[in-house]
Image (cartoon, rainbow, N blue to C red; front, side, top):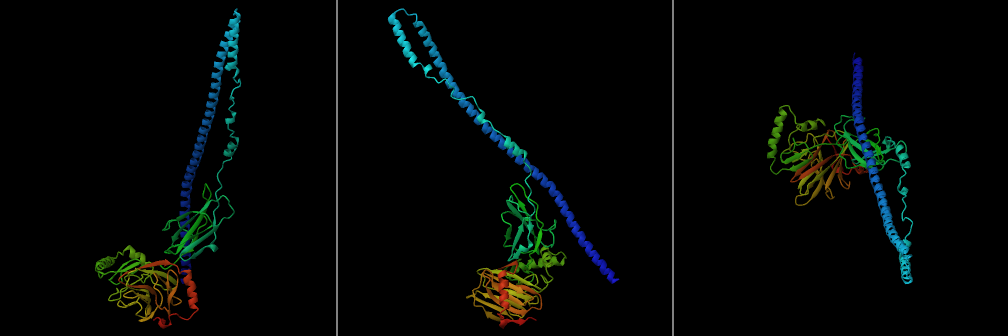
Length: 497
């Protein structure tokens, strides 16, 4: 009976998984169908714009060429009219002279005839009719302004759709996830010299496998990537995975997207647990600040939250945090006395993790480290065997020390602007770094026997915590070197109870 139940349970699980896959595929098909309709309308619109552009160019060229023909016509007309006017005047003068010469033949008086003959001779010599060129200055030929469209007509008749680039292929072996950066590399299935650029799209997700249509985040796009590799840097890894896809574009059209790939981008993400922090601390997610009013303003706020919690309707913020770990807000006593402490709301139970802390310039005193959940409400970080930290005191003079189990080791290094915290739970190491230079400041070596919570103490100032960070490559390298040497914190090393 039990074996049958187990077999049936496996069948149910398989069917549920398959149903989920089919549902996701149906949503993909519906999304693709809508995309076909929308993209068809889009390319028709672009085709109309291209032809309108051609018509516009042809109209402009026709207007320009017509203007050139009219200018040539005007020039030739003017030249011929000038010649015509000159010839008309010359003909009129010549006819008058001819008439005068004809009348002179009838003169009987010898002296008068000689005088008339000399006048005719002088006028003939000066007559414009004998200086005219009887050849038109311009021809009536306009064929030099005719256009042969035969080649252009053949080109237009040969016009066809530009080949759509094929989908690129993302090369997983060349993709790299490191230092909160992701490098994506791809290649074309065959050489295509018409490709102008690529479009890379990505989105964060908490689902492994193929991307889902109904995901909580939209695709983000990086356009005009000229090479076949791109690095996204400075990311906050606040999701378990990232989806990537890429497509090629030529001058006119974009091809299909590549098959999407999913890369793991998991990192520790936590907020500060304001519900159990000291009342003299003002806490907002990843920021904690000393509150000189003594927390009176927060008491009413916290009481209101507690009353709301009793009504059975948790706030959205509390609900979202509670999904991370059972060791979270509202499950321990509030720190009090001189323990100006706040813990993170997410427990570390295994693995390697990294986060960074930046203090305000005028912060008088603060501590950064980890602690077990059972850290007493009067206890200070580093003064118990259940907490480890580095402590910075800027009161009167600056001191920097590593603290654990009420023992301190002075650190002869400059206090950095940002402190990086590396926690290897399984390896039993807690290291502190200069977050900028990755200089190792101090390492605790121990054996953690309970889940850890990030811990912070602050007095007269404020701290900003940055999470969602991978363990930096430089830190990994230094940790390997550190593990090959003797313990750097032997005086404070213990087996945590």
